Length: 441
Image (cartoon, rainbow, N blue to C red):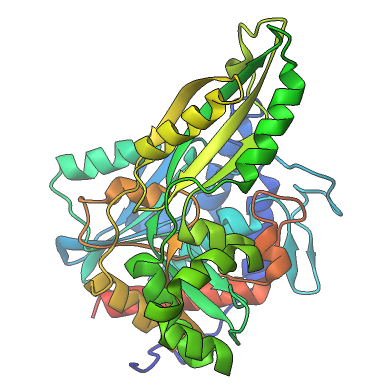
């Protein structure tokens, strides 16, 4: 592990709290049902005033609200891309505070987007602004990219990737959201873990319709189908190379029994595959496919017959289960309950980042340096990120937002009572500064 290069840097925690608070006050919901362009304009106006050197020294391009800022370096051959989206989902559930207040209290910033992902975006901007203020000389180009449509899989980042490719720009390293610093993700492991995303999951959205006909009760059939689906294993469950590497990285922090089991994975793997999902909810996602049910959108409920009801299944798979195979298995299972299905969208798992890649080694080295004592482990991101658009367009694509989240903060992702500590944002600023300084050696 190399030495930390930024010992003299003093984080401006009060400033970071103010920055994130103002970010949160901008109600940048990308869902068209709640979209308000004035809130996005307010956000853009704020960052231009808050980070004058970034916009003075950088070249800013607008991609229908998506932000791309290029800071020129001496070389244009192998740029660095730092990413984090600024759109958010709507507030849901009963919050303990105003979701859009940006309240700062006892060293914590409260509100929608604190975790996902305005906290890390604030850290990116603050790190670059501070380095420019110090007169830091960039030897390589830096791109700051922030989507205004990530939550709805919008076109702004794909358009940016096309723009860069069209101008013969191939980044050496892309760092997006997806991972983070968390309390032990599995029982029997001690200490915090920095989870670095190497791959993300496939996904599909399927409308399932039940009809009252031939003496069949649609509501009863739907309830029975949902119950049986939640007990069924679709596809196959396995560890795969990424999950195996994750548990290997955690072995030094495992208790005696856990360490023995994972040191003999070839013997205990079948038992672990069966038991882990029962012990830890996230384990089911790590090891295989999952199905979650949500209410159909207004569009998905168009032309709904009066004698029918619908529900939407969100299918998510790991890289050793093809999404087409999972959808086929799911639709065949639904038909056993008299349901009709329609696939609305599907996305295959992108290629994984190699475990021995220079990009992973670089980010791992920085994380170990900035967060001493934290276990750094590769893992499979449980959702999707904009990073996937850079697969094949960048030498390395890493998903890691250097924000520590306790269990409550982690569970507030797309949920109620989202918040993050100012200390976590300050540490993220230190991380991004270290990334930039090492990248430009």
